[in-house]
Amino acid sequence: MNETVKKNESNTEANVVKTREFIPEIDLWETDQAVVLTADMPGVNENNVDIDLQGNTLEISGTTSATLPEGFTSVHREFPLRRRYVRQFTLGDSIDQENITAEMKDGVLTLTLPKVKDATPRRIVVKRG
Amino acid sequence: MFGTLRTSAYWNPLRELDEFGDNLGSFLRILNDAQRQTEYPPVNTAKSDDALLFCVELPGISPDDLEISVKNDTLILKGERKQTKLPENVTFQKMERGYGSFVRTFALPMKVAADSIDAVYADGILTIKAEKAPEEKARKIAVRQANQE
Image (cartoon, rainbow over all chains, first blue to last red):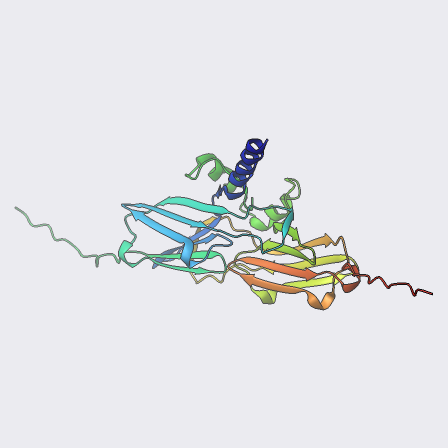
C-alpha cells in the first residue's frame, strides 16, 4: 500500500511543476529610425527573460516561477503559475542587429530594433565606354 | 486571448487573417472574452487559514490606474490599461495587446478586515491579500474549572 501512495504523490508533483507554454501578445510598430516590439509577459522580470538572435531569427522567451506563499492553497485558477512565453520573429535586413536594446518593466518586454542608416543616395554617372 | 494556450509558437498565417479583421482595436476583444468564458484580467484565488489571496495578471499597468475596494462581502477591482504613448510618424504592424478599462468583482466567502487589505504590484502581477475579519477567526475558548463545593 505504501508503494501506491508514493506513486500518486509523484504524479501530482509532476502536474504541479509542469510549465505551460504561451505565445505572448505583442504590439509591433515602426518609425523611420527603428522597429519597436512590446510583448506582454506578466510575471517575468529581467532575470528570467531571454532574447536569442541567430541570423535573422529573433526569439524572445521568458519564464515565471511563481509559487503560492506559505500556507496558501489554490481556490480558483485562471492562469497557470508556471508559464513560459516564447515567440519567434524574422528580422528584415534593414535592422541594425548590433544595436538592439531591450527593457523589461512590469511584465512588459520592450525591444527597440534600430534600422540601418541607408547610405547617402548618390547619382551614378554613366560614361560612354 | 489573454493567456490562451496555442498549439504553435510560430507564425500562423490563418491567425494573421483573423486578426486583420479585428482592426477596431483590442478593446472590443476584451468584451468578446465574455463569450469565450474568460474574464479580463485573469485572477487566481487562494486562501489560507487567516487570509485570502488574489493574484491578477496585469502587465504594463500603472498603480495609479487601479482601484481596489471592498463593499459588504464583495471585493471590486477596477482599472484601466492605457495604450503606450507612441512617437509621431508611426506605422503599426501588429496590435495584439489589449487596452481599455475593466472591472472584476469577487464574492468573498467571509468577512475581511478592510484595513488589512494589502495590494502589491510587481513584474506585471498584482497581488491582493485580505485578512479575515477578527470575528471570522476561530477563537479559543478557555474552559473554566467548575468550583467544587
